[in-house]
Length: 302
Image (cartoon, rainbow, N blue to C red; front, side, top):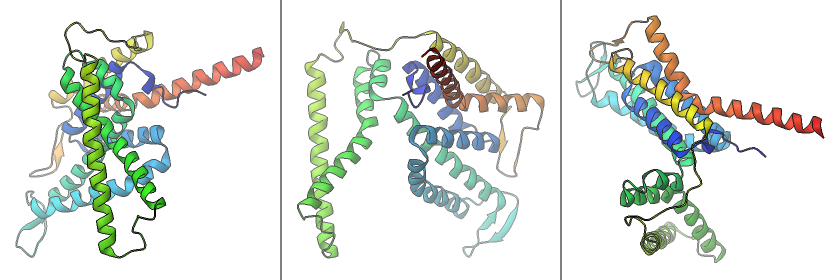
C-alpha cells in the first residue's frame, strides 16, 4: 500500500522549508484573501494527514477558541471609523474591529492547523537530523517538546484505563471523589514526564550526543524529487516574500478597511501563494497518479 502522504516522504529540509514559509506568511500576511488561502489549505492538508473524523474532533476545540478571539477583540479594541453602536461602557463598537477580530480568529486557527501538520510531518528524527549538529542541545529539547503532547495523551489514556479497570476511576462517586482521582492521575503523569525526560537526557548523554566529531547515521538523502521541490519552494517562497515586502499584499483594518488595488501583479502574487500552500496536496495527487499507473502496469504485465 502506498504511503498516505507523499510530501511526508520528502527530505527533512524540504519539509522544514515548506512549513517555515507557510507559517511565516500566515502570521505576517493580514490580507483577507491570503488568510482564506492559508486557512483552506491548512484544513485540506489536515484532512489528508489525519482524516475527516480527526479533523472534526479537533474543530470542537478550535471553533470555540476562534469564536472567543473574534468576540473578545471588538470588546477591547475600539479603533475604526465605522461606528455601529455604543457599548454599555460607552466605548464604540466599530465594523473595523469586528473584521479584525474575524481575521485574527481565522489566522489563529490557520497557525494551529499548520503547526499540527508540522508535528505530523516533521518528526523528531527529522528535526534532530536537521539541527543536531548545529544546535544539539536546543534540537534535543525541541524534539522532545514536539513529541511530548502525543506521548502524554497516550500515557494519560493508558493510566486512566488502568485505574478504571481497577475500579478507581471515580465515575460513579461524588464530585470530590472525581476531583481526588483527577489529582492522582495528574500526579502520576507529572512523575512519568519527569522520569521520561531524565531517562532520555541520560540516554543521549551516554551515546555522546552533541560531542565534537561524533558521527551520526542518517537514512535521508536528497534525490531528484527533493531538488525539484527545493527549487520550487525557494522560487515561489521568494516571489511571495518579495511581493509582500513591496506592498503587493498589504491590507489595513484601521482606521478603515482597505489595501492593495486589484491588478495582474496582485493576482499573480496571490496565485503563487495559493500554489505554495497547496504544494503537499499537489505532490499527493501526483504520487497517487504514479501509484495507479504503476499498479495498472503490473496488473497488465501479470
